[in-house]
Length: 495
RNA sequence: GGCGGCAUACCCAAGUGGCAAGGGAGCGGUCUGCAAAACCGUUAUACACCGGUUCAAAUCCGGUUGCCGCCUCCA
Image (cartoon, rainbow, N blue to C red):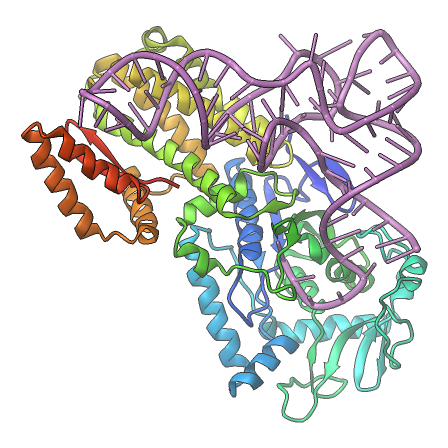
């Protein structure tokens, strides 16, 4: 089966065939750096991180470009508010972006261009648009003439006439058509400015992606992605500019991710109902946030709440718990221990079959428009089979062929989770980080907890189970659960 | 006003023509001094509603209701 992707342009799934066999040119709209990123940004970045990883897993050589919009009105406004210049603001939030994305375990794209490093390229495209009669100079700004491009509206599926009749169309006397958009914005005194044939100014928003995309990926790219809200006008305008200037198809496959909602409403700056990534990560493990994102299909809206995040956390804990159990109980083999398929299969044929068929099931899901939710479903089936196999041995460690089957299965689990960017930590490290994060909200410090565990240990040794249970109950009231094992007592916070 | 999307169990969520994945929560059980974790069993004659097409529909077509998004900066 070949990779199928939902193409916004076609409004249906299509077989993915790259322009050049074996290579993928991928462009994703990055962020405008004037503030910290919120979890809507996190979703978009994680979704395309998974797509990037999966394309590489399929063997493609992927050139992945994700830009920074480092000049725009919001950045300038922010700089004025803080009494500094646009560059300081942009650099600060680029730095913050990297901190957030690195903690989310997001891979760095191949190229991360800055808009301000590509002014010349934008000017060249605008000049070409003048030659083609699609640009005009008016009132100090340069505009794109939308009715020159008869494909205008093809991405967002609307007609120029319908939009004109719309209730909310910007009124600007300088525009020939209300839907015309700015290519070059003349600067007012004191604003950051670059020289251009039309006087000092700065680029309009849309032109940067045409310039940077074509600079690094050529005039036709395979995939261009971003949030659903960019379909119109941003991506529609990119198409209009690029196809008018270059005279060829700009993007073959447009991929758009759905929103993150809060209480069923779009999370956005203007509504003020957003959570920044860094705020969320104070209480939620970054991988749990990733799990949350990829538990749903990328095009659907997702609701962000304590409960939906907790579900992702519990699921991830389960995967790590099983992985840890295999590490603990099915220790490394001796150098000569190798077993045939038949022998492994005899240990537990269901587990063996699930483990050896995961790859096919996983790929079928992922090739169907990156259906990560379904892929994770298959992963959980394997997890349960592994844990069931371990449980057959009670609390005993596994040896020889049984250990080999457990390890083989756990490897399969880990490999596939890794393709999604999951299970990137050592199990113990994850579980430890996770419970410490959760402990914060209980009001109990780790030292107090250790002391209580020691007290209870003493009570248990003296068979004073009433006292031991009293301590257990006291902690349980604070959502802290103690877990006794032959190696001692550990704890976790229920979520 | 124009355009588009969604509606699956208590909750989250796959499934786009052939017996309704998976996760969470609940309940019963195994294990445990007691627990927890984990495992086992269990929880939708049924996919918003009404019609239609078909041997067969959650899935296709038409209509109704409800929710959401875009048309303005937005991931």
